[in-house]
Length: 255
Ligand code: ZN
Ligand code: FE
Image (cartoon, rainbow, N blue to C red):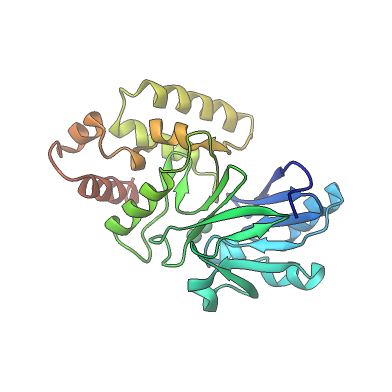
């Protein structure tokens, strides 16, 4: 069946700084990374939408904590990384890059992006990338289950998505990510502009998602280890991209 209508996406703030997302297409409605059931329930009731799927980008509790309650209440099917099946509560459909997935007749691209966790995936639905804790607005996830080379290869995979791809990430970390980014690349005009915009948005308590792949490539230091200014800031003018990426990641760990 072809898609029956345009896609609608609603941002659901959860816990202290998590984002879950409702994705609606025709009679299908998915929630991405439900940290907790309450705010998801409230958003569904407000919209009058019936949940059909629960998508998880990775196993961490702040992305899966609502799985079992929402599954029990709605009968929704849980879709997540097949390679991490044992750690996804209530998993019904394990997906990977080869399988992809289908949502209301739409082909959903599944990208395997390990390193934050070894099973991490990104769902790309109709030009919308749900990146979980792999790629953040102006940042990237911590390396819990992989090293810098693994994360750099995962981020490089995301960088092959078209520039207009919308990026919906798992946390609102953008303002502090921006402060860190400016320490490495203060001369990046696009970054300066974005940091000002982000500050203003946060002052109005607005979410800074979605961003776009094009904007991330222009401003996110974790996607810019080839930047001459970043390399100079780090004293790593002739190092490899992976080595520069690894140094940026380890500096952010203690920022
Ligand atoms: Zn996580
Ligand atoms: Fe998280």
